[in-house]
Length: 220
Image (cartoon, rainbow, N blue to C red):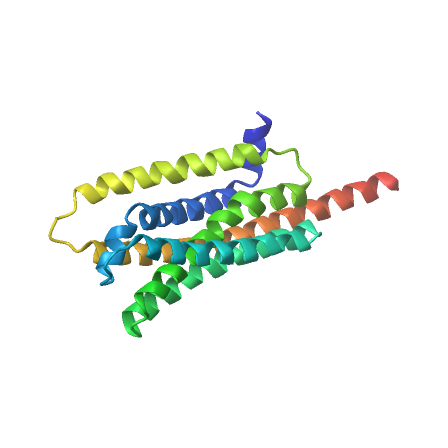
């Protein structure tokens, strides 16, 4: 009951956050599960070392960026930082798509930037966003519950996309399908992050002011 009450209290902001996570999970999973097809679509002869080098760079970048949140002690700032990381990651995905389409960005760096942009919000949600949000609100909440909801919806959405892909004509190039889907996901994801960020920050600020007013009234 307390879990449902907590979620309903911040329903709009948390729902938008879960939708963003759903979008990121779908594209991140496709990048991972169809890496061979993506590399081939970029014109590469696939060899194991390509996966190793590209993912090492992505992992190092994600750990450095998300790990820096530990230096922020204030939970409100920490939450804003983690949401900023998520937004920056999605913008990076958009930049990599534009770079590949319009400027001929090298395929290797396209995959690196794409991976970094997707794992930044994905890892931020798992490590920082929900944790700092609960700490910021000082409400009774459970990070495990929020992660369970986000993961359940995220992977259910991925399964739905895979079923949908099965109905797409075999004549459609996988790279074309992936790029089109990525643009849709980036647009929805960026919109959800911005609206969720605004909603949750506004809601928690109002709750804080209300609590302070209540305390001041009781003191008098």
